[in-house]
Length: 394
Image (cartoon, rainbow, N blue to C red):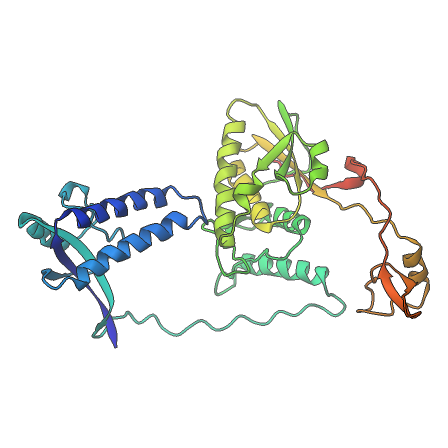
């Protein structure tokens, strides 16, 4: 078996090691300011810190003192100045490091996780019983089954007799469905209490903030507003929105970076809370028409922050969701001819094949060739391109 052990090791305080410590300190500062999902500075810090620890472990004459394992907090020693060391360091680590500084050595704290020994582990009991398999009702499939599953998850989270709080998962659910179902369950009901439901995404990541359910007395009317804005939830998602909105609530370049979905949710939540607070600072009531498309992390993060804001400042803001509806693609003659036959000849039942025409090739045989649909300019209007959702207002 293996266990962990920590040492404070003394390296010669020469220019090369002191310079490496300065690089580690600089990388740590840059990594602390990195955006969620940006691991460039974090990877640089980890690489430099590993170089320093390996130098300490591999130095043949470096004295080392076994110390207790740090329980959380920072585990790095930066330089020979005790005032620059983390305040959370245990006393024995600080004393061992100070004794090395007294003899003109550079202390380095190293934790080795693979030393021979036995790890004292607390017994936490058996694992939880797996959740019951969910099955859709007969005749319910596709998007309707996804919606039913999402609704069932929230209902289970609100069940007072549940033995464990199962997280809700909005991954893969249409943004309009997510918004409408969340609003339905955010409304307070007689005889119920607020429940904070955890949110987990398909990649296994969880948001740091649970979603407040049964928390607000939402109403269906939009009150008079001192400021009205039409905003796209995310910039550069559907350029058709540019004709009807004043701006974008979130920058796509900032939100749509590769990162765990839970971190994106948290980022949207933090940004939305700050912006709602700033918008409502000097206004009697702010009315937002939120033109939204996909990216469930942005939808859930936004409406969680809106719920939290309305809990703090009731009546300060109302939101009218506007769901983008893609215009219907016109059907050409080939498609109409195909639909008049007894169903599609290729693919799964109910799915229409791409339009095609028959062309004779150089050998005299017939082959299928895709035809280009006629061009059509989309007409932007609230009636044809966007659909109003249920109002979020108290």
